[in-house]
Image (cartoon, rainbow, N blue to C red; front, side, top):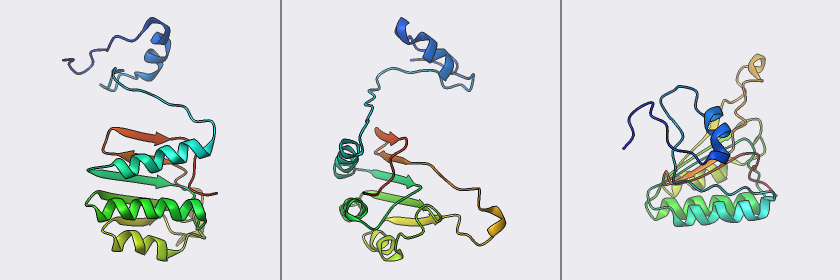
Length: 153
């Protein structure tokens, strides 16, 4: 077991990345993780849906853009199915990026037992640049997706 501040052994070819990633915040590089890079939305979205379907404890999702199209509805269906089987679902979309996302789909998530909210509604037009451009999905604290993929065709 490592103590706070103690560094994990990184393979020599990753030493530069390990040093860049450690900023002295007490969270050194740790092993045991696998990373898959997706270069196309189709496989990435399929993997996200698979992670939601396999979740047993929680799914936390936050996206800048979520649209009411086939992809968006499949995603909402997956979140609702997870919530209905007792998985904690929390879903957050940006109010500007997802301005056309209907509240009825957010209500579906809530009726299924999940939590759904819109980030930073435009109540103050002078603060329009404080948007949340994150695209993150975490399932059971073991599987995570992050990067440039929004939920839309």
